[in-house]
Image 1 (cartoon, rainbow, N blue to C red):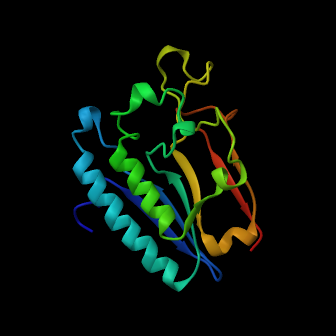
Image 2 (image 1 turned 45 degrees about the horizontal axis):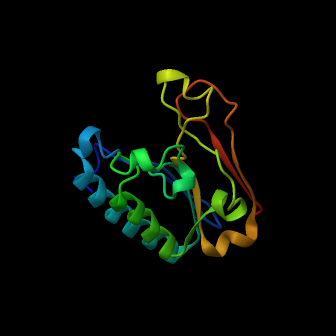
Length: 170
C-alpha cells in the first residue's frame, strides 16, 4: 500500500505450517499529529493479516505501538491522550483480537503487572520500571494449542525496547 510503505514496516515469511509477520506499526506522533494515518494503517494491516490467516495461521511479532489495556503501561490515567494509548488505537488492537487473533503473553499471563517492553530513556524510567508494553507476539487462535510460552526479555539492554519471545511447537 503506497500510503504506508514509508511509515509502517512489515516483513512476512512463509513457512509450511504458518506465516511469521514482523512489524513496526507507525506511532501516532507527538500531539497525535499522525493518529489518522496510524488508524488507516491499522485497518489496512488487519485486512492483510486476515488474508494471510485465511490461507494458514499467522504469528505476528513486533512493535505494535499500542498499550492495549491499562495493565500494559505504568500510568494509564496520565496517558489517556498519549500516542499508543488513545481509545482509537486500543480499539484497533481490540479489532485484531476480535478477528481471531490472540495476545500470547496476556493469554498465558492474564494477571501480570509491570510487564513492559518499552521505557523512555528519560528519568531512569527503565530502572524504575516505568514503562509500556508495546511489543507483542500475537497469533491466530488456531495456534493456541502450539503455544508453549511467551516471554518479555526485560533484562536485555541496548535499546529503549526489550526483546520478546514466543515459543511454539509447530
